[in-house]
Length: 280
Image (cartoon, rainbow, N blue to C red; front, side, top):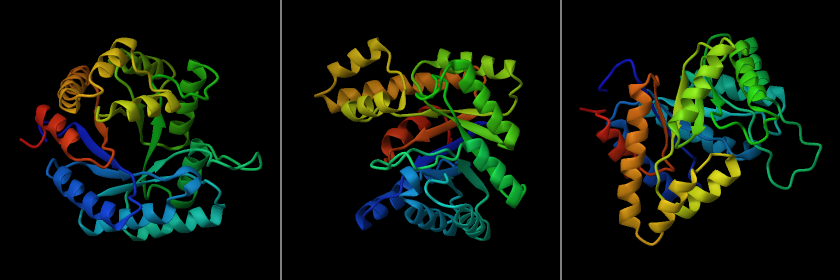
């Protein structure tokens, strides 16, 4: 790393096919050259990828690639989650990304969501400090939050329950992150909050995902990306420059590191990380 004080991490989702798993092993090896602090592995809505997540995390750890599984209660009971956490502990997992999780599609009103602060408290109660705990943060406000202030207070609740640090939803306006950090400081949050970074790879996918998760695409950026919709190379070059500049602004103004949403692709992320001087 160019600066040992900065944390670098990459996020993957569990592939569903043997071909996808083989490809991801190559992506992991490519990004491992940057000596990241960890790779995180997502957990489907309602825990739908639990076994795939667990198997991928164990495989990564076997290759000395530190992996941090995402975890939510989903439809599982306490005994099931406790057993999964014990399995992770015995496998040498040192970090958990603790989330409320999303409601799986097609599930009725009887489905109970367990909030992230409750999951953090549960892990601390049963496993003490065996795991470093990451939680989610939303500089542009969680889409289901009642207000900005409520969202900040809820994040504080996760830290009060025992979280060590937070990773944000991705954003393209650095001022949203800096304002968010100021508001967090005002309520007494003093733990690190790492910006989540989404490389610009596919215009339509980015628009659809951003609309669903509440990440804002400024109008000027949306219009600029639209102009590259049929020119993949121009979109790639523009996206690389834009996201590199975003990362530089964040790091120059005190962000403690970066967490990249890779979409299981190495090249777009690797180009940005190289631009930032990691791995030199």
